Amino acid sequence: MQIESGVSLKPYNTFGLPAVAGTLVRVASDADVRRVVDHPQLGRAPKFVLGGGSNIILTRDMPQVVIKVEVRGMRLVQERADAWIVEAGAGENWHEFVAYTLAQGWPGLENLALIPGTVGAGPVQNIGAYGVELQDRFESLDAVDLVTGRTVTLHADICAFGYRDSVFKQALAGRTVITRVRFKLPKPWQPVLGYLDLERKMLESGIGAPSAQQVYDWVCAIRRAKLPDPKLIGNAGSFFKNPVVTPEQCRDIIGRDPEVVHYPMPDGSIKLAAGWMIDACGWKGKSVGRAGVYDRQALVLVNRGGAIGSEVMLLAGAIQESVYGRFGIRLEPEPLVV
Ligand code: EPU
Image (cartoon, rainbow, N blue to C red; front, side, top):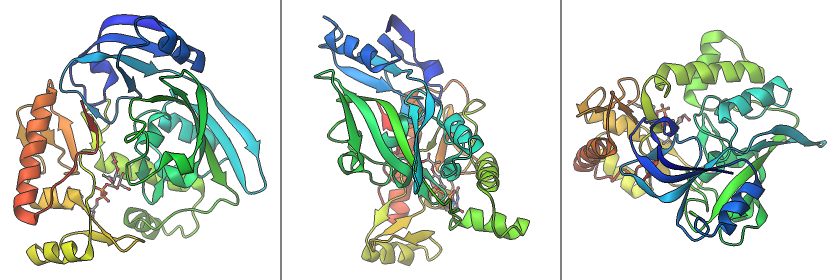
């Protein structure tokens, strides 16, 4: 365990926002987390768990003890007749883990390629893209309880996964440090190709039965074309969740604009494309101060250089107001705002 004081968090959040952690502790194992829990001062202090910093908007310095998770390791736990069970340390980079599983011949995560952040942050917001969510490949995870210091193994029933949501954002927020995550990659592998962008790639290429590597390449190409690389342009992925509404609400919105992009969900509700609505309000490419709306995907807010958290939130507020004014829908931020 490594304890540091007055640490700049700018390099540790993909939006590149300035903020200082009074105390930052790097943990590389469950035992390290227990040392924090048992520590005479750190033990009692409020804590904040930081993963890859790809889903966070920092608007102020952090008075809490910031725990930076650096647990490493990737391995096959078990090969079963119906699946490969693969485990990764919470501090591993998500995309590198996806690439590793494919290279080892354990496909199943290819639709989730290039999502920024760490493995440990994946279950917190149930990351998802191109028709697959983390919960579809989830086996279990280990987490250390920040009150008792004990390691617990949690399965899907406890994790309460939802759309960009889980128990770690709700009842267990600030209570646990996820240290390892296990995935179940089903055998035989079957591609998930239902998403419109992937269907387009299939048509363009004429490849009807793509390999996992081919799907991975397509997902990477689609993401690179639409989403800014956080190494080059600060951002936190989608800034708002796609709102889920009832069929009645959807009819009202279609009445306001018949072209609104919407998808029926299996439970009868309807998901609206927030990016489309923001775009329809004319926000694409616009800026407020040094924060802006990405010019190729209106759902992504970006740092145009030197932005601070309050500028980003000012821009977010202005977008929320215009979408509400035009469609009667209140957009909810996707990243955690602190
Ligand atoms: N659209 C526009 N203008 C825009 C942006 C989108 O018209 O500026 C339209 C698109 O043409 C499309 C629809 O809106 O018809 C949806 O857009 P897209 O397919 O790009 O997906 P999204 O709903 O904007 C979601 C996730 C992404 C994920 C993609 C692919 C959320 C909040 N976002 O975006 O996740 O990569 O689907 O599955 O659910 C993230 O969470 O950070 C993220 C990037």
